[in-house]
Length: 245
Image 1 (tube, helix red, strand yellow):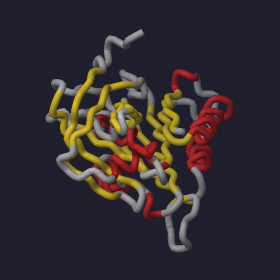
Image 2 (tube, rainbow, N blue to C red):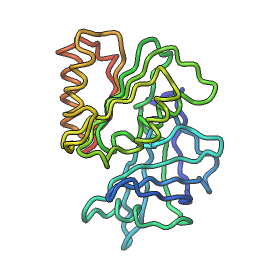
Image 3 (cartoon, rainbow, N blue to C red):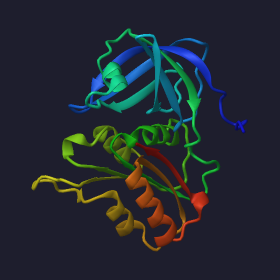
Image 4 (cartoon, rainbow, N blue to C red):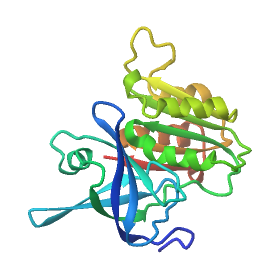
């Protein structure tokens, strides 16, 4: 049943305005909606991009990696998959390219009102919708009176997506705490080591007074949900998640 509080999905066309390489295999893409009217969404939702090839229509879902902006534009963050039909197509586009998409879709959004502290847990490009949520939470004029943590797990230092952005946010906002953790850290890494599950247990065991937002590959999400429910005793209504294959 449609949620009356969410924008109704529609069909649009978007122009690629900017493309940045975040790592050797990860791209940040910034889009402007150019057909279909104003594209409205809620941070955390996703779009379905469409491509016609050899007469067949192909679609792929990508989380929106930004909060709503005045220009109704949006960002995506995706990995180039070896041999992948769609990811390589998008990653190879030049600014000015036009792509069809539909949306917004999905229910992985911040629950309002915010009555508890927030713990965001992400790995890899699972950071995309959470980046959007954090942009919305700490937008100019927003007044968050709760603490927010981001536990972000990747393998290597150079794959901490949006690292400088999150560090600037943590320096500016005393209620935001950025905790990157590396599973294959070099010897000179002075930050946290291990997986996000370990950081979750170390920092929040014994607490039930927070809401969790989890995004990443299925195995991690399932493991974190088990920790939160069975280990910490959180109610299922305090745990929000999105899984990637």
